Image 1 (cartoon, rainbow, N blue to C red):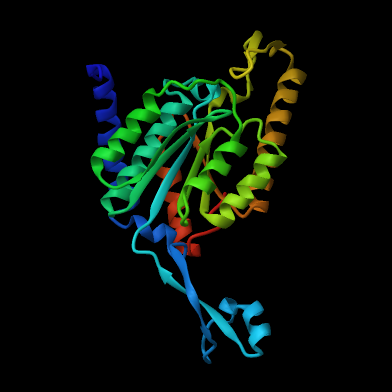
Image 2: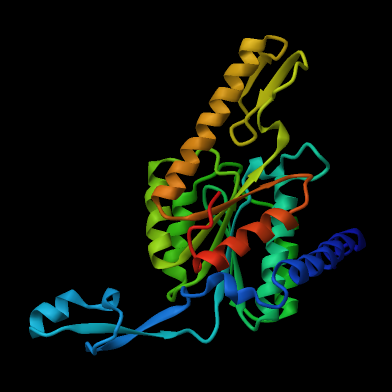
Length: 299
């Protein structure tokens, strides 16, 4: 049986998310993904006026006359929530952890999807696949996913995104909308390659979770900085202006490198911060996606 305090927390997130759903999507969740829910159906001979971008050049060369690929719009969207539940997700300095922030975001997406008649699934990962729940419709299912994100206890503290994305590509056969929710710390070249592959197969969107204490900018004396995933610690003197400047410089380099990598992979991304409302950044992001036709709404 689920304890009453846990039910209460789920209920609070549900109520808050419902309000966000109404304000952000206004009952039109799919509009942010227009042009992405297409499935290959076959080929036919080119007719004047057809979109030349759909020409199948291999068939055209073999048949010595132009042929185009035919697509049909999928009747429903499949949304996958791919959540980093490694130890760093437990960090938060403003009354909310990154994992709680992830749950709030995912609740909004899940409730929006099921209210539009679409299915939603969950994949939680650390350096292994922690839990996979296949896509399904319905509010009861959506609430189950929220509960899992909030209270699931992972077996590992570390992060390895490559294996999670590889699993997603094998498990979900048809094109889906994949929200990859993580702080993206420690991402490497293998992860980058798999993110690119995943975005070719699906519509991948990166949700980057931040906290104000991800980088120390004020003089708070001697501080022990812990790596929650490895347990390693280092003491830094934040009273030294040069030290604070170096910390900020290194943090900014990591952030800029992540942005460059996501843009290189043609992946949309959005920043969310613990302790801050998610309505404004979500609304701005999805409005940009609607404007540009479903992709390249990055900031």
